[in-house]
Image (cartoon, rainbow, N blue to C red):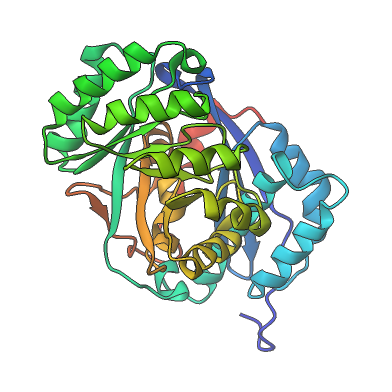
Length: 367
C-alpha cells in the first residue's frame, strides 16, 4: 500500500460467461435455459478484487466503454466516492437495468479489493452483526415435474438440513392456479410440517387472484409470498399484504435508494439484490432504510456475493440459496460456502473468500 494511503485502481478486467441450465427452467412470467454471469476484476497495488452480476454479456462492453474511464485511477480505499462517480456517469444513459448491474459488479469487486489490501475478511472490514447467516433453498421451477421438485426439496430439507425453502408459482402468468396449489401441496408433503415454505409468483397474479390463492396457500403453511403481483404495482402489493396473513416480500428489481423507499410501505420484508441494486454499497443503505421502518432485509440471489454483507446488518432475515446461482458460483469460484444446517459462515480467508477459476471456466466465455 502506498505510504500516502492512496492506492490507484487499474483498469478493470471484465468477462462474461454463459452457462447452460441443468434442465428447462421457468417461473410465473418467463422461461430460460441459460444464465450469463459477468465478472469484474479490479486491481490496485498487489491485490485484486472480484465482483459479478447476472446480466446480458453486453454488460461487459458497458463496463469497458463507459465505466472503466471513470474508475481507473481512483483510490481503491474510497469506495463511496467511486460508487458516487460511477452512478453519476450513467445519469444520461439511465441507471436502471444494465448500467446498474455493471456498477454492482464493480462495487462488489471494490469491496473485495479493499478487504484484500487490508488483509482482512470482508465481514471483518464491514463489521459483523452475526456469525451465522440463515439461508433458504430456492428453486422449484414451474417446469419441474413432481418427482424433480420432490428431489430438490428433499435434498435441501432432509439432506442438508435447510429448514426453509421456496418454489415458483404463478405458472403461465397465473393461468395455472390449480397446478400452483397442487405443487405447493406436494412441497408441503415432502418437507414436512416443521420446515418453512415460501412461494414466489414473480408478479404473475392479478390483485384479487393473489388474495384468493394466498388464502389457499395459507392452509398449507406458506409464510412468505414473494411478488404476488408486479413489484411495479405498489398499491397492489399493499392491498395483498393487508389481506393475507403471510408475509409479502418484494424489492429484487430495485436499483437505487429511492426505489426501496417507495417499496417499504408495501411489503412486510424488503428484498434487495447487490448484483442489481448498485453493489454492497447500495445494499447496505437499503438495509438501513428498512431497519429505520421496522422491516427485516432479505438478500435476493447470488448468495456468495451477499454472505458477508448479510452478516453485517442486524435486521437480516435470510439469504436466498438460489439453485442457478449456487450452481454457477460453485463452478466458477474456489471457496464456495456450505449451507448444511441452514446457515453459512462468511469468514474464510481475505476479502469475500472467493477466487475465480479462470482456466476451468474458459469454455463458457462469451465476452
